[in-house]
Length: 373
Picture 1 (cartoon, rainbow, N blue to C red):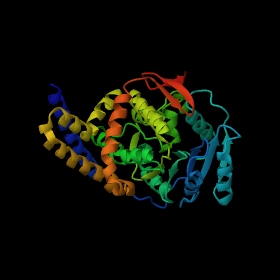
Picture 2: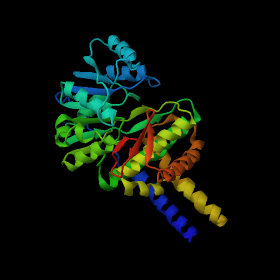
Picture 3: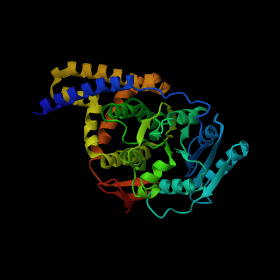
Picture 4: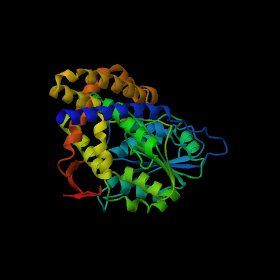
């Protein structure tokens, strides 16, 4: 019975790999922006502490080749060390309108949403780009965003990302897993059901779209506010677009325990944001399933070979063709380790309902909301 179940799961995983390759092939570029279609943009950057490479990350947003934009940065406390970095970057680019806002402590669980809400109130423009502090871009980001909003029905775009690892082996394993597995799931979901969600690191939206979903006040109690933002934008009748612009997401270099905690937090959040989709993620890991099959039935090694080939093809399609990831190209042999780690964390997230975030413990509810313990 177990062997039949495993064989069915592996077969489903091989079909998923084929779907991922097809979904990559259908991933279209945005139309080029026209000189008359460049609305002013407000860039919103929530900050908290000094991430690895923060100054270089911020500089890339001040170096945009775009005629009119402003940058707003927000910290919670006047003692935040990110202020010194932000002021240094602002001084280096005096021609770019920018402002630093000290928000104070948030009155609700999601501090990032509170920072975005305060920046939105101060923003001058109606097209908004929300980008995390660990994001790095090229000078063409805003031009691409403007091109994608030429269609008046587009209310929100969300950027796929290439994870850039830090120095630790755990960071490299996580980055390779994200670049070979995570994006494939996004593209398959887009191909099968359309974009009805958003990804956190960089999201662009119209001010009207945010108003239609109830503003940031409607997101304040959710841990995965990015997913909910895209979901509610789609429900409000706006088109949600997976951008053609790939950002760099610098995930840092956490030691094992910290890396494990944040990945478990992410998985538990995903399970509550889309429970059936999370269960379906079992098909995204053909190698661990094939290994389990061989452990039960040693004669099933041809299935393991097939799983390896199909997984390699799907990994190349996302990490190579879409993300152009040099890390996966160099350390391709880590992909099986990344798959096993991803599978174990996927299982672990079915147990436990609390997370640790920025040194504080929170309880997750079934609807994706969270509150301090």
